[in-house]
Image (cartoon, chains in turn red, yellow):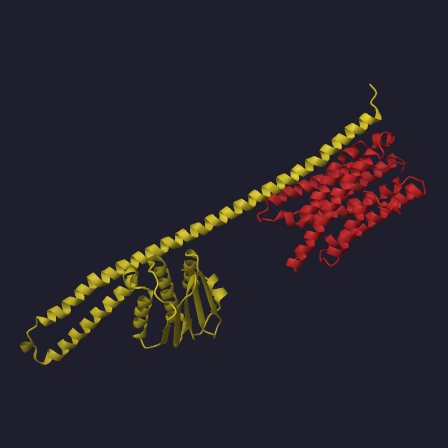
Length: 222
Length: 262
């Protein structure tokens, strides 16, 4: 049982629990979608541990498929955040088309044996740009927002740190795979993504709490 | 040159650390910019309020000055001309007027009444002069003027007001607001009863003007240009850190409550 409670799974499970509590009755489908996404993330994470520890097999294919869901969920949510500032649906469609093309091109190039690290890097860069774009539009907007209690701001913060922080790992993915963890107890990827995960899910949990408080104070808007 | 695994891990680890810390600074910058944005917004709002107050203040000063000029003109100019009528009449030789004596006496009487009216009106217009004796006598003078029409049943409650140190600026604000309220009743309310209450409490004084007229939708009227009288009352109160509330609805009469700090 302890094998399933890692630095990745504990924050994910806690965040899922908070998402169910705080977003369960939210009227916005994009916020509610996050519950499903987090549920899927937890399931993939636990299945990944099972495949790796119990079946003693590579869990890479599982994470390769999960990237598709991750990109769809996070892209859709960024679209929901940027839509009030004038982002058109066709931009989302164009980005998803580019992503799918890159994804399958990389899969074919690696004969379905390698993780899609280039596509993941591309996805990270796109999400970092989306976050920066959101900050820019938020600061340029006429309406003042109290950011310390702004749900969308905290969600973006978590995503921004996670995807920007993971960029180095994604870029050096092949080297990290080629050099297994012989020096430290855990691989450097595991530590970096562990820290990123804690930051991501802490920010997201805070975001869900802010969203809940916002819904309580203005029931019609959320 | 061969790079060891340890060195690779160190480079990647350090780079990742930098990549994890950099976004935190971006977020801190966004928060700090947003804070400045809020500060700017607050300053803009304060400047707009100050500007509006200045405009209102100037308008009130101009209005007060105009009323004073009209008051002087009525008293010194028209009043003087009118006072020439009784003077001229008194110079007429009564033995020669014969059958017109009665009519001349009537003209004399009308002229004297007109002079008194003008003097009273001049005093009402000259706020500072009227308020020299205090707010209560000033309100009573205005009500005496109003009672002459005998159109309204007027009551004025001021027992709890007590003796107050005169504050000409504050009393002028309150008195002009009172006049604005009474003017509104005369022009629009179609009321038969007017109740005025001047009350003094621990740290504030309250003036209430109520009527049993046709009433009006407060929010709609305040938003319209036609609601300038209402707007003036609200703005005047705000200028001296007071508060004015107007309660009314069609068919229910109107109640204006002005509360200002002592």
